[in-house]
Length: 169
View (cartoon, one colour):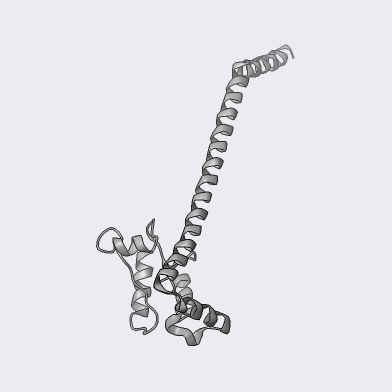
């Protein structure tokens, strides 16, 4: 992916509104990566710098270029209010009217919802993992019990009997 990404960065390097860049999350870029929820590498993020989204598309040059051309453009935001529809403008104005403390509280509430959703997901995945482990253990025990009950010996006897029948003919 690195050569395709480098090619994409070169193609967009003179764009006044589209930034394609990379950050080394293992060195000086670690605080930026931590602040934007980067947990694995490579991770591609896009959108408003204050609200980056995870990219889920293809990782080859053509897919990346198509996505960049279609999605890396100025979007509705407080700094681009002219790009917003009336409903978004009203929503932004409402947030702008809040005090810094009230806005921080609202942000914290919404981030808590995200954390709760993530925790709920992890808890449910763990339950699935525990169920899978139990089912796998149960299956292994049943297989062992069937084999211990003489399945292999029965099959050997069947083959021996078939051989005896052929020898008699």
